[in-house]
Length: 296
Image (cartoon, rainbow, N blue to C red; front, side):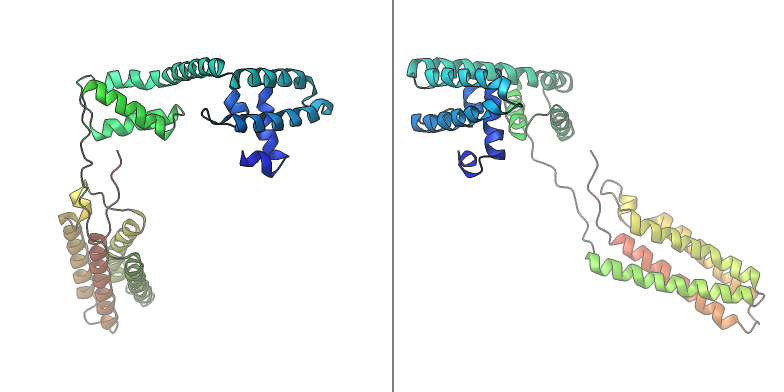
């Protein structure tokens, strides 16, 4: 009602252009509720008739104006007669119920397959909801349909299981930690380049392996999230410790022993310490990362 009185251009076109459509019921074409009062019906009919009288010269609606005005006269006859309006409301409700049952039938057929044993898991319920949404059912229709079917089948809804969440670092501190690790890795890579420029190619090559391992952990921490269902990814697992200690320990020990008497030995020690610090920081940040929601 408020739309028809505010802007007589787009709002009136939205409300009253459907009067000429025979499949649209009286309440919808007049933008009224089924339990509206007679004065509201009178106001809507006058506005719709005024609008369609003005469209008789409009080429877009001129050929529909006569049929639309005839429907408005029919609507007035039905909606102002209590007996005819009551009969019309019953017929409209039955038609709407039949139309709704037709739309719900594919979902019911899927329920017959999934709920054959009269049990419904949370995964099955979410599958039904997604299927109903693809069938263009509204959230209210889905709730009514599930409630009716669960009641008829004697299925009780179970509470959603609580997914254990790890206590994670705030995002600000996570990103600050990763930035600090990046600085350590950048400094270590610069030290490796200096070693290679000073004819220490073998020690520099050996130190590249722990640097690549740190890059792997950095990419995992920035672009992946641990799953709460996978405890090996949600915490510091043995594989991380084994690979880190083997790669870091073997590479740094071998490279430092190869240049033990070289003047660049302190730089090699510094690079090894930086790589160890970066590895410890990355493993610690991964263990504090918030687990992602499970995909069901």
